[in-house]
Length: 234
Image 1 (tube, rainbow, N blue to C red):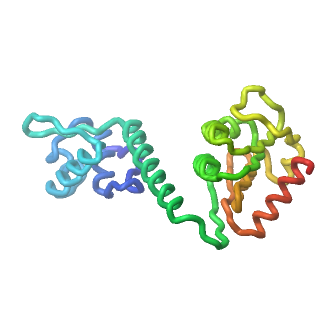
Image 2: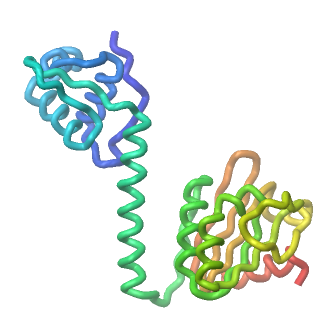
Image 3: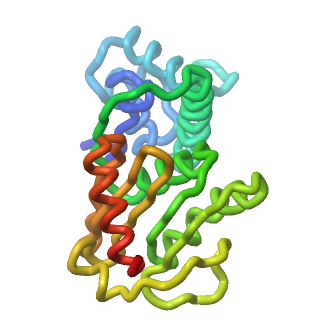
């Protein structure tokens, strides 16, 4: 019995049959289209179509020998390809957004998970020409290091307040410290606030769960500004 690898490539442009074929190749090792079709109980034409699709997308390789055999690319290599492809798509979209310019209106975008928080914060910091205010724990301040350096090079002011104690090796000068206990009631352990122009990013953290919002809603942004002032004692 073939135990399919627990990997799902369909959110990244792979068809369901390609995803099925990739999982099968991981388990079976190098295989012919005929063997794959037999193992998956699908038409041979569908098997070869899926295999050729995997080869075209860099998720499999094909031998020169006959009958031709296919082998799965290692999963971490596919992850690297997807990250590179998605990052370039996001960079292109960001450039288009900058060309179009800002528009008035209130928007609220829910954030779930640390990766989306970091990606959105990095891009928000990079795009904001004016002063920004950030309240974060040392780990997150460090992760956002590229954005702080970019802003410093461009002579853009960053007012960064640290939750807890200063470890002494952060990539940005600090405006001050916020006692962790002061923020835990409102933001949880490791909450985050970012004010950049007319937008705000705010998240709460309880255990390993991170959730929050990116918003341009003036009322919410105003409330976040009030919260930030309260946390830093201003």
